[in-house]
Image: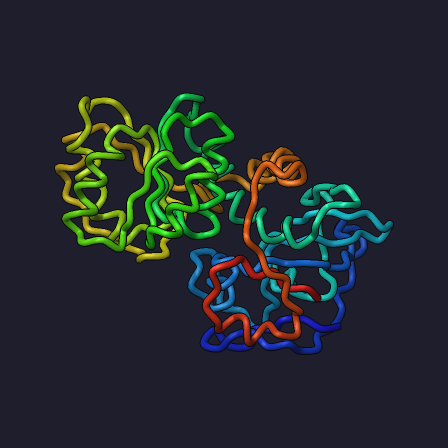
Length: 318
């Protein structure tokens, strides 16, 4: 069968022939025909070996989720465990407990594009913090696919104020119809960004952070020092590190205000906990509650699209 194949962490996957996986008797996995699999940042880090869960075993077929058809013809969204037999192939092996049934008229491209980025904030809001309607949120990295969905999810869950911080005012303005009540352009001068953070985001209850690195480092103190009551808790949920893996944070920040840093991802959430949240998220996507810009691309073009910048979520179609 055909698949995207990684043979070197220094090179993009290539379209290649690989053996069709065979279910192991007694293991319980079923052979699924893959219809669509999203090219998410998480998958890029899997394929270049930089993700914190990555090992050094090669070759591997990347891809951790997708939409497929089961042997009995049912349409389903699936999530894989850590496996070298990923979703970017014509077929893959899936644990039935990690499959969510889809209606026959569900759009495979939409579901494959949206589930991974939407899951990041959906699980964070519902599993990592005690989020209640009427709370306020700052989303760092709001102009990316995951950030755009986080804006929509925050609104859906009843957030009162949603401060969207990202790069490019035009892209930020497009977030207002999705639920953003204020925006901050992180491409502005650092002093201007700090002033905007202090003025617009100092009173939030939760920060959803897809960036880390310099943007997070530069936002923490303006946010904390701008709070009217620094003893009121703000929870900073670290999800992605698009802008860098490290920050420098003085110890005084932890004494000057009541801030709780926590992560949301594989490990901080159990696999069972993540899977438990998927049916409700699938239902909202099928209902059209959330939107995402996505492009379906033939799997044969994997090497090309892997190397091209994209403003829309790429979905590979075997």
